[in-house]
Length: 222
Image (cartoon, rainbow, N blue to C red; front, top):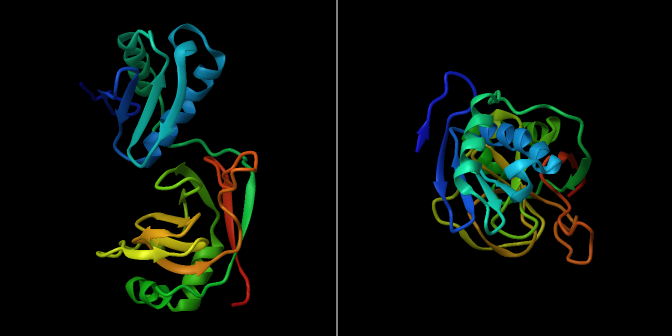
């Protein structure tokens, strides 16, 4: 079912398994704004919101996970009502700041410079000059999708992913930046490396970068 409110966030709500709704939106800002609007309802735990276990944001969707036995029709109605009255601009709030030191020695630094029309020094300055925000996590445990950086750094992924990207590689893809938490295949444009551990199962929480965290990249000598 597709909802087009006169104001607020446009959503399309689809069933996902037996106890969840997948809420499709127009863009990432709408996802983050809707998540911010729903989260306090879940914490207050009144009515059907007491049965919601988790919100899982992604680039264009928000997964709303409920407990078995939840009246999903009522939940969908509530989601639509909240979306219709929510400003699609995500709120700006003070968050934890994590500084990520980076050696800008990535194999794609020159390629990014060529694509953006910037010098390599300007690419570094753009990456470090603007705070980023963790929008959501995915791909691998500890991999955070960072948004809000300098828009000049928007570059396409590689058409053929690398088979091996080292842990700590710092990359760009589309509007996002991110740090690979472990060695894996990957298609992002790699511009640097950090020694910070993104995922540690013995840490609480295991992920260094959690949704909502502000990230500041700093340059260190190569």
